[in-house]
Image 1 (cartoon, rainbow, N blue to C red):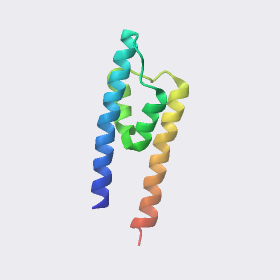
Image 2 (cartoon, rainbow, N blue to C red; image 1 turned 30 degrees about the horizontal axis):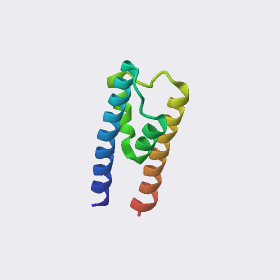
Image 3 (cartoon, helix red, strand yellow; image 1 turned 135 degrees about the horizontal axis):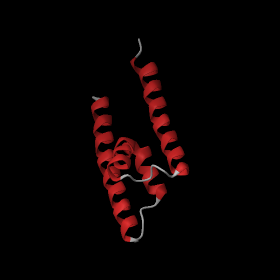
Image 4 (cartoon, helix red, strand yellow; image 1 turned 90 degrees about the horizontal axis):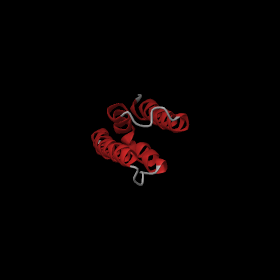
Length: 93
């Protein structure tokens, strides 16, 4: 039950993050005010990193900025570590 709720949060946050990436890319192309990188990272941290990854691919956005990608990879690794620990300590007999 709890994993279904977590999966729903990941799906919702991924959709929001994907949209935010698209909005930021559109604003970048138009020379308008951008979505803050901090906002994108907070969305990724809140479970939206899969949507962020898809946004990077679909919009060709943020992939070349090394400082951004280092934080993004750190967020992904943090999520992987969290899932590993949850499995190890909550699911193991």
